[in-house]
Amino acid sequence: QVQLVESGGGLVQPGGSLRLSCALSGRIFDIYFMAWYRQAPGMDRDLVASIDLSSRTNYLDSVKGRFTISRDTATNTIDLQMNNLKPEDTAVYYCKVVKYGGVEYWGQGTRVTVTS
Image (cartoon, rainbow, N blue to C red):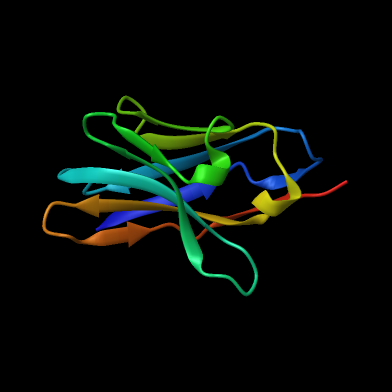
């Protein structure tokens, strides 16, 4: 089992910044894919950003240039730096990892609210 604990969400004004962090623990070997998703009320859960073992990244078009995903193997964390936040970024943000073999693990989510 892998445990994921997200932190860093909160309330921020438009144009502000937040840094989300996802702490991994447990049997974290064989993870090859790491990602942040978000889900706004009444909407599907969307992939926001992903990173693989080669540190190749992928971003949702609407967050390109504003969000940056990174991973720290020393601390076993996956971070999402979010700059120039917009009201449409308001959602619950979830961390996900995938192991070889296709097993997925999700965190419990952290809420981000962007409002003036």
